Image (cartoon, rainbow, N blue to C red; front, side, top):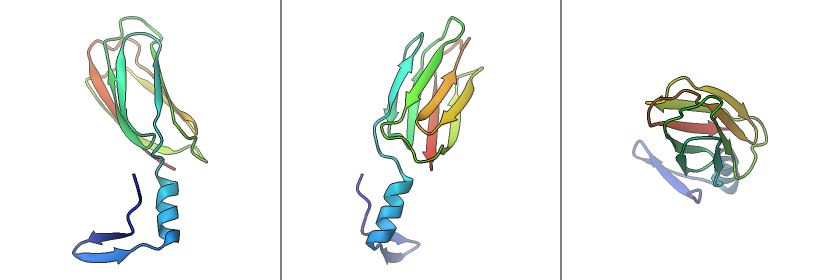
Length: 117
């Protein structure tokens, strides 16, 4: 995704100089993440900054989902997560990605995330 040279906000148009565009690009990591499922099945759609993980039924314990960012953030990002239909999960964030343990999840669901550094 390219950073726009101008934006319209509340009816006013603002021109962005190179400094503004570099700052915006630095804050948003548009690289493609990878995901690994220890058991069960699922998929990921989105970027390292925002996406949705579809989680299949996890019938055994220690079912880890590891998401690795395509490009590591300079610092551990602040991430917001929203789970729908996924129960009993724990979360650990790092600068290179995050880890979900969805042991005992009994249905298919989604976990959406949004990460900014």
